[in-house]
Image 1 (cartoon, helix red, strand yellow):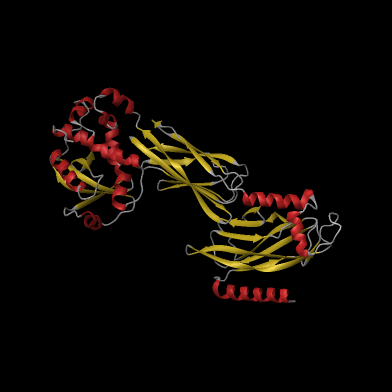
Image 2: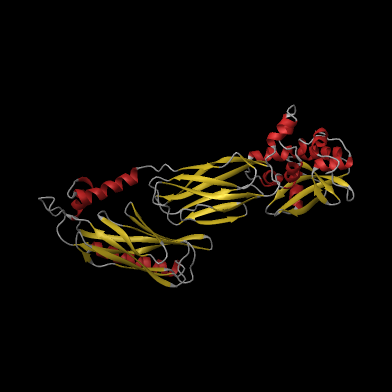
Length: 476
């Protein structure tokens, strides 16, 4: 009597809590009052969600000797592992009220009163909310451990027999053993990215995911450099999206195999060159905890002219990075993006991009310019050629005053939009040497990756072209 009284009290308390605090979301559970060993019964849950939408998860922990199989998921993914039933919706059904069902099989030798409860989690205004599912009791009729023990154990002993003795090798013992193994075996998630070291055009990125016995929800997030775009390759049942340089694969339920591969195709903006880093994180859920595996960065060199530059001027190693016209032109407009972002926002961006941006104007000496630009391909002046110093390029624009205050810059900071970025420049100098000196002054204020840019009548050109147009000398 005390047991049922406590259960009734908890049920009333849950109903009161849900009414006042759970945003109108209620869960009603329906199970039979009794069942026999080696039979199955249905668990039915009615979810009244109101206007709640988006991601949600329903989880119920079943007693030992119970196993679950899916029936009516109503759009959710279903998993049963370590005695936990999980139903996960990426987006809840549109109906204000809906039902889900699953079937429970009772192993031989199970008896006594068994309680099934659970929890429903959802998101409101980007905040996770949870409500408890009122517990229900089902009585498993018949003597425990039938045909396996000469004694008749009490319900408490039955649970002990299920895990410690071997009354029914094909059922109870197997279930208990597999549960223990799964619970105690540590996961060993590994992810290996495969991409070409040098790419002269579009290329494919392949990732091998070794997940072991981990299942359920997972997400792969890959961050691509500026100028890179991605399209879906092999998805292995995941949903694919690409937005603002982010490749995203999301699984409601990962493939059953312990190891699988996904891929995506990368297109590189015309003229992009230099070293670029691809970084990634694989997130998954294990034992109701979100865990992450950081995939080591992969460096991809684009442009296809690095080898020829080395043979052109092998005596100046610094010049082998970016000397050709196509490389320098794009480096000035695209590559400095991420390193400037790291300077202005203190976010972590690929190291190799920093070196590429630094080389942009430091590795374009006048001697090399004459080797790579001829009189026939030097652009004609369209007005005054001038040089500026770029201090940042940000995806999310900030007020110029904030940059000025942060780095103690007294000059006016100009802004321009290019390739989806807001670029910030300082000064206007007719001579490269004056811009170089201004760059060094700005670097001394903490903008370590500041570099010189060039303009021909307001149109950005490469420093290399500007030096040729104005017949000026390059200074390191």
